[in-house]
Image 1 (cartoon, rainbow, N blue to C red):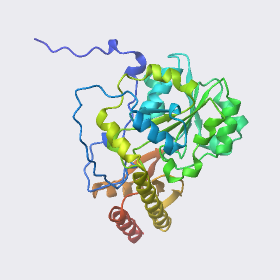
Image 2 (tube, helix red, strand yellow):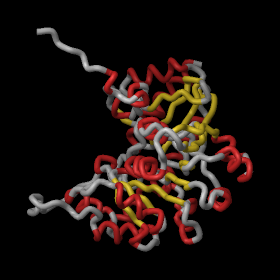
Image 3 (cartoon, rainbow, N blue to C red):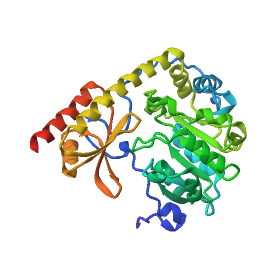
Image 4 (cartoon, rainbow, N blue to C red):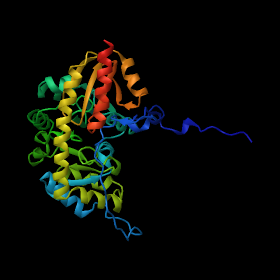
Length: 357
């Protein structure tokens, strides 16, 4: 009997042509020092006692929602818990964009899941630039946004670390009232909390803030995020979201992570990581093999090297960082802020590059 191949004719054209998001963990790499996924170097010890896993969980666990609302200084009806911020992105596109008709605006280079999500839902990409976002006026930005239904602003931006002033986000949202939703992705906001747009929710019904426990909270393996917005905007999201998106186990761990003492510990770790980042930036600027350092916010530093082969050598030695093609050049590298021992491996690599010059 001849084995039949799967007929691609069954696939919609947009899915057949889809370029999947390539995450740091999707690449089957081997190494000893992992600084490629913007993970926290701090691991947690969790204690769980659950005897009711035979029952479906609360779709939006009250204790977690209440705890995060308190942390974000919002009302609990302004918070929706999601499976990472990625589900928040998907829910916004699926809920507010018409397939084959609408578009989303984003500012490149930026987080790749905005494009992948739009492509998978047959929603057009209005590709703008980070230069426009950072240097253009709000009027210029709104003109470029045009009829796009969603406007994604990653703040701080991944992978550049740049931040957009709240006054500009506010001006964009005001100009787009009743026209578009401004989505502020704050995956890295704990590293610069004064930049949060959550305070703008009291004045705007067309702003959404996306958050995660993956970065500063050191729970990347939990896949937990939050969508913050006003109740009218969230109402249709609540209709579209899966009936049981949050497992009881995830809810228990998230609840522990949002206790007052755990938040204090998280902030202490952020202070340590920000200090370590300052040191790493200095090392990079002193390295003759490094052409440019993007000194932005977040638990990472993105740099351009003179020679791409130096990146390959680091990877081959077991020092795993994230190579990027930015601005049509393939010699960029994003380095996550690890612990003291991990960053010492980066220092050794940089010292070796200096010795070659």
